[in-house]
Amino acid sequence: MKSVTRSSFNKPGNFNFFTEKSPFKENSIQITIRWNKPPANITKLNIDGAFYKATLEVGLGEVFRNKDSDWIFGYYKSTYASSVMHCELMALHKGLKFARHLGLCNIEVETDSTDTILSLNEYNHNYSNLILECRLLMHQLKHPILKHNFREGNIIATCWQRKHEEFQNG
Image 1 (spheres, one colour):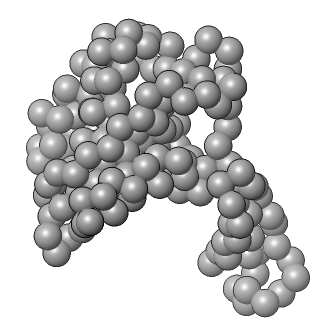
Image 2 (cartoon, helix red, strand yellow):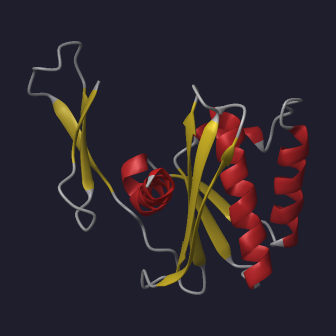
């Protein structure tokens, strides 16, 4: 069980992971979730995808920022996908393509989808072409660092793809 409090984009999200079966006991460990700056000379790419099962619609959002949190490039798009995994892989693929197009070789990619990270090392016949394309792009980009962060730490990409959804819905 976890409880979440987040008051603004500038403040980190707080999580309480309860250490007992009853969440009402005072024994808890608190961790702070936030966007972490990349090391010097590294560009951070935050990616996120939102999947709507009823319509198979997808919202993709990607944001490139430097070590000072300065905005380099952002992108959002609506499209269609067959599943959440397909959606998240599409977000990774699109972000890697933009990184290559922009000539960014020293990148760190952050996603809130651990399944996306794991899928790059496993065979999945449903998405093998997309996974192979992501692997090729990562090779061309000199093997960028791929990290997981909770949704609250990846909030800018999440908000960017939601902003596009609002625009699409009028």
